[in-house]
Length: 357
Ligand code: NAD
Image 1 (cartoon, rainbow, N blue to C red):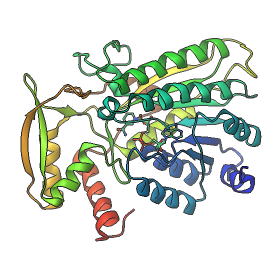
Image 2 (image 1 turned 180 degrees about the horizontal axis):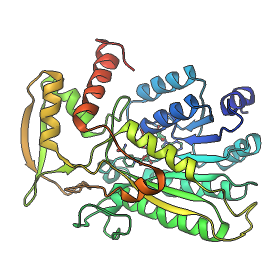
Image 3 (image 1 turned 135 degrees about the vertical axis):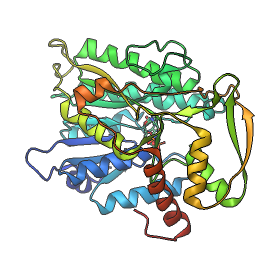
């Protein structure tokens, strides 16, 4: 049974104007930061996460500790558990759902395709099913991904660009989640906002991402692989600092209109929005490595390799003018400043050299 006392304490807004937000994937990288930011400004926050072992569960538990200190409780559950979700929605009147639970990572999809279908498609539908039958319906804000642009060669990527050539199963499930969102918006009047994040990095980040495992491997003296495309040189990414992403998420939440449907009855057109949240400044991976070397004060052992067909795209670059206009989104941290903060956290967390924050 659910620990109702903890749940209500966590979900109660401190300010009367505050929102009550269910954050799925709260023990994840982005979920942790978003939950902290919401709590800090006085919103009620309840987390949910299944603490899966896709990457180091100890890191997820450490983030959970951080959240508990801030007064955010995480329910240990899978978004596919419909009965449990129903119980939560019966117990707490959520004004918003910040849906960040997903199977992330493009390469792992080749080993475990089922987990992408389970979390990114079936789990998303399950959540929308419960949300659409709740009265009043919460507004849904969820993480899509820049990967939906796939093999699109037109840069920078704008929301209206083609998304019909996903390069990985991960990208295909994110693209599918956008189609599913349209359907639930159309039929049930759910207010839904999709955020296409571009390579998010920062403290408490994900160990499966290049900036993170490069840091680990450089410190261990292990050789790192830098991929190059035959025609474009070093692979480049529009690295976006976590605090900028959090501001974009809060902007999306604050501008989300109330749903028009209630209890599953359609009452008119509701909001369906999709935004890029990137940094508009792609950086080659070779430059990422030299910035890490500088911060770590260690020379990396490198080998340059041709980009394999494992789901990665060669280049990402966000056009963010829509998010700037509608959400007031304005990234302010460049890769050099952001990596400095990441490295300081990494050294503190793993090597205990300084206070990690
Ligand atoms: P993350 O893996 O750190 O966080 C996801 C969390 O969801 C994890 O803690 C995991 O345990 C949980 N989870 C997964 N499946 C679940 C399920 N079925 N039920 C309950 N919990 C489940 O990833 P992140 O980097 O924080 O990403 C957050 C969201 O943003 C994801 O949707 C991801 O696809 C998307 N995204 C991230 C990036 C990035 O660069 N970090 C880029 C584009 C999109």
